[in-house]
Length: 249
Image (cartoon, rainbow, N blue to C red):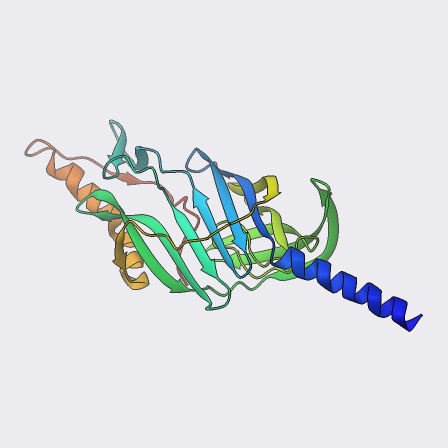
């Protein structure tokens, strides 16, 4: 009997290790209703590394409006690479590629930061989603509150975007106000899944990134006002921040 039990435990450990080290790609549908944005996000997982790849940003986005209509800004050129987020669980480092405002133009930048602290609150609730038994968790992170469903049937600590630290793959995660959602649409194993850190951008520090993010709106307002006829005035109305991160505390 003891030999049978030991053999069974060894088999479970082997399966667990295979799943943990499995090379997978999880595809999510990302919806941000505040930005009227729908994107596909591919999250590649290989052992202790993961990379989330967003489709490239739209050529234009809305930052603020004035009394005459919507004012748009454009990023620098047609960038087919888009935003990428790399996480290394071994080094506890994260490297991501995002766009920052420099001289009133969006330009790609490479930023490194320690893996943020994710204080997940695990709940006993369960739900079957896409055939997986999922568990419930809540998270408050950088100004937003999230409700997540994850499955320990795929024992990896990664999820889409920056999300990290749950005892299973995130299947569905959404803000409690319903504006932002990541929903798993496909999951498959792939071979030779070599994950590379984001590149192709100016390297800046995380502090510089935060400063540029916070000053972006002021830059665009100043540029817009500079192009107005002499003596003209306009009441610029700044919309609410609809990004994934509302603050960096």
